[in-house]
Image (cartoon, rainbow, N blue to C red; front, side, top):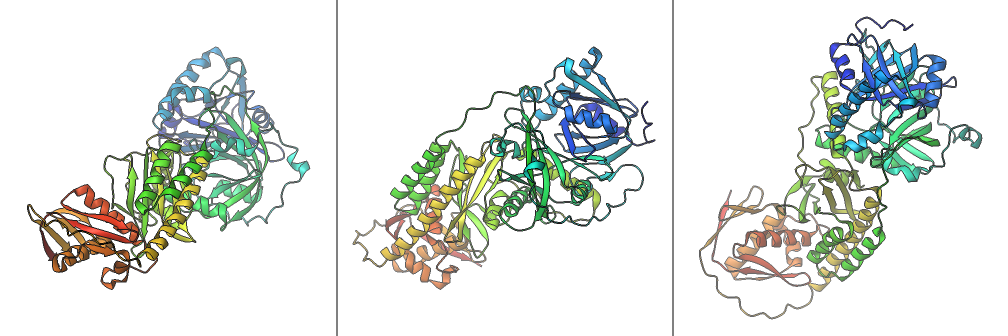
Length: 638
């Protein structure tokens, strides 16, 4: 006999969500309060919501089924992958039976629905079929009447009861810092010989991880995780953003079980974890904070969607779960060779232009990167401007992004790499949190969406800060229209390349300053300008430059160009040095650390793009020539 359902517990909308056929995750716990968790391969609900049935594979869910049989309790999370709209139901009486032939049409409809849902976020039908594969003779149907239901959509409302007064979670004192588990304790968990490093792709978040915990009274709970971070081979860090039921359970009882899925093979793994401590500083926290901020910034939630801490867990055991996974993709090779090739190209480069081209060519040839850009920092304005790019319909030279905005801006602000492998999943998750925040606090001011730079619809992005002697010079950025394109190995390679680029840029700048002392070479007098007059307008408010009504450049680079054309018009000068520009207080260069070479390169490339009859030629280290082929008319606009 089922325990009768709580009257009016599930609304028509909730019943429709379950009936549609969405992701279903089942959790329970044993007498020792050790949680167990597994994905259901199907589910169904009665029209009135009084009875829910989920289907599990016995071979995948042995401990879970034992725990449910012992306690009669379970928790199930139903989540719509395309929106992250999520519902958790709990029951204290469950009826288990072998699946019948009549259940197979239900399972087929469920699989078809999941194929549609996951197809919306970029997963192929064969991946879904592998994820939900089952053997009919091994299926168990679990039917129950829901006694509790909770809004589990990611955000501050996650864990809020749907029926009765929601109230707030009771305060729980933070657990004292735990010690590392003993060998005896670690040995009590199921083991499969899998090491954490071998399953790092499962921690990337393309398919969100699910975490099961247990309350002191034995009630299971299951929730989505926004981040699982690889700390080392014995530890992971999980994100702490909101004080919810999961957080309450962990502080009261430190054991957890996390279900992860390989994004290419659909192989499941269970991580058995023990909570140790929460960190609010350090490498793991900073990396997780930057990753979260990069996502949040694009959905206008940089000020509210923040990381409160990194919860550090010891990995007690890793289970490889029986299934029918897809073949593993071939292992990548030649990553170190790509770094070597880039290093050799940078060593041969003699100018900043050659350095940037060497990096972009190395990314294209060695890592098969098709879309990349290099942005340099304007320290005074706290903005990054594009000086080189490849793979885009237009170069985007001179385009800007503020420090702190999006993946690029956050990588610059935090001075740490930011990598997002599945932009669709990440954006949907943050959008779900945004909706939850709106519902929880209608008057809360959230920022406006920030459009992605570069590709209109990127699916993978990686931004790495360019540093030299601890000083931020800019950001190296790559992206792809395909999901899961940049692994942690790509990140390692990009960090190495960005570090080498930063060092060589600093050396090139220092060498250029020394070379400026050398006497200038004697050059022939330039040909007299001819043709139609070019009208050059300078808007003094922000040093914007327009040539024949076409925008050229602004800011410091605009001020530099105005000085060049003014000196040419008034004095006939065509030969200039970086040093004189740096010493000219009227240009507003912040200080000697400002990357003047980058601004000159940007100006040179913008002039070449417009091909208006004015361009810049390098004549040596720290020296250049203004070439004017048409008469100029200079106009200043207040």
